[in-house]
Amino acid sequence: EATRLIEQFMLEANEAVAEYCQEHELPILYRVHDPPPPDKLHNLAVTLVNFGVPLEAGDLARPGAIKALVGRIRQHPQREQIEVAILRSLSQAQYRAHNDGHFALAAPTYAHFTSPIRRYPDLLLHRALKSRLGRPRRPFTLPADAGLHTSQCERTAGEAEGRVVRLYKVLYMEPHLGEDFPATVTGISDRGLWLRLRDEPIDGLLPMVALPLADPRYDRERNRLVMRGKGPPVTIGTGLRARLARADRLTQQIEFGFGAWG
Image (cartoon, rainbow, N blue to C red; front, side, top):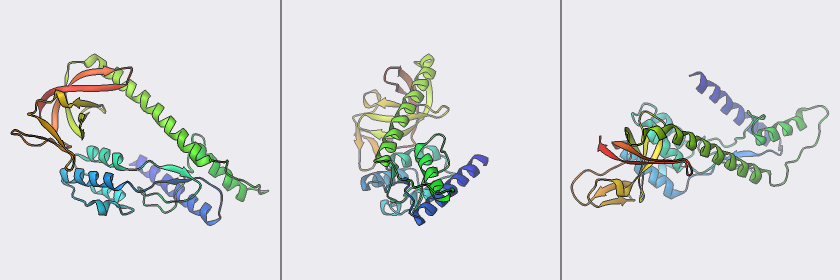
């Protein structure tokens, strides 16, 4: 509760400062989040139906819909899997000198202000504020291509962080090769099933060839795996036991084999 309270304070501060800067035409980088592409919204709508949370893609396209959806699923038993699906459907946020709004937060004006010691866009915003509020006032302009540069740096830092996290997960799982774990399907593709362990924040792929299914086929329209023979389709949220088959340090990838359904 305390963490959520502080996060809400930060969101309010970011929005309020961005509104002030826009009102006074200060040169800052806005935190911009474009609406998701229609195909991703359609896939998310299908996934939500599979989880028993029916919503049309057109409803999801409205600003504020994602924020309302997150509140709606707060008590859902498969909330974590739904949140992963939501994140995969969203566009990547960027920094821009032009304010195009923040779709996910349903904020018409938003900027990063609260972390100037670790994010350069926040520092630039503080400098813009000081140029107006300081005494004496000093002119301030954004560096050329600041939005593009900081967005690229953010992606680079995020990729590096992701590689480190994946590596530590591989190292953590290495001693457990051959062991079975309860898992949940969090994604489906032509390659197979993406799983997350129920008791550990570990993700990995269960390849299609490792599934004990009769001629499995990926139904892209309904985002599920179906068999030409008997048996219910495999959907996001399906439970199974996954056997750790590979933990690769070089690629930071984890691969599972099939243990049992349920």
